[in-house]
Image 1 (tube, one colour):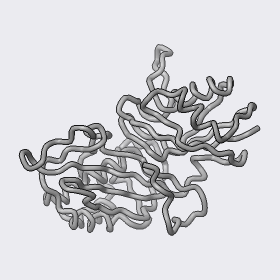
Image 2 (cartoon, rainbow, N blue to C red):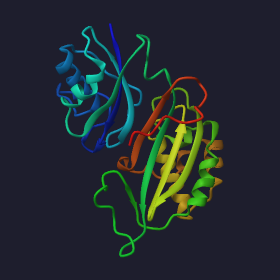
Image 3 (cartoon, rainbow, N blue to C red):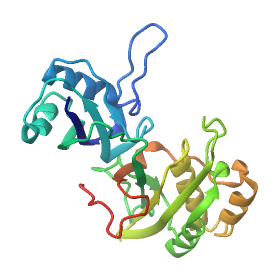
Length: 268
């Protein structure tokens, strides 16, 4: 039976996250997984699970989500991305499709993931709030010190117990994670971008890191606060959990355990 690997992009604004969710009354919340499984059912006439590599939260976006499903029927793989996208709502797309081995698991085979948090900075009249991309950018109405934010980000690199950078009820027994890279850049006027690459992230972890680096950028705390958070595991020392709309999943690497010299291409 063919197993299909698909690259999925979505605007998470109107989704209740990736994972399928059933209400107590039996009705369903609108999720990306639900939408994809309905599209697969329509295309293949088979009701099969679509497994995603990352369970993004409600409101979080993606350009590089990886998912997989297995069917009995076969469809020309060159037509599959178009066939599924044509059956999906306008805020989700299948950008690529490929046949993979039957044992491919998008969750356990993932070796690294990249998330991005995007800020709009400054005050009117010099800088107005974002208009056309307001659903994907967090408004920070002040200037940010990106050098200080970068210094804080560098202190995250390595293997640490990151319990202090996650919500208390994160649902995981193991809080040890490896961060390969965390950097802050200014891609344009009044824009600041944090990108972080790791082997996995706890619930709300990236949004808490973004909130902590925001406090550093504002000058309200120092970069060495990161060391204190990692050493103590105290969530109260970290910044606020920033809203989901500034966060996007950029890519997921499946392959050797080491980080590739050239990360997978950003499809955005």
